[in-house]
Length: 163
Image (cartoon, rainbow, N blue to C red; front, side, top):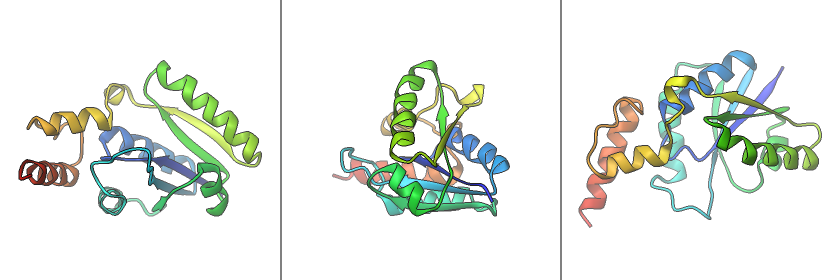
């Protein structure tokens, strides 16, 4: 049974993330979507909120599990007994960083491989940062995120305006 980790902050999850999840879930027997709790970043959504949204938008997949984690990705992969890390690449600019991380992870955990999937062309420009910026200015995010995520973004932005 091939088990893989698709890690990220998913703040928020976009159609680009879902594209990689869908395609990955066809390649592996079990896909664990690792939701990173990164203390170095100031996320818009809490880990619990991101996990909830991911569970909602991935409900139709029987081989996808959503699991929060912190610390080193390679330690999380070992803990989950995953043999593969899946990373999405939007552009060539992502590759240098991802290659360095892949090589470091392979050094720390030689039994865990990394596989890169290029994002489908219709999502190659899309990032969570862009989606948050559009939402912050009241723009329509429906073409970038699932409806459930759009609702949560709007709710979050209304709460920020109330401050």
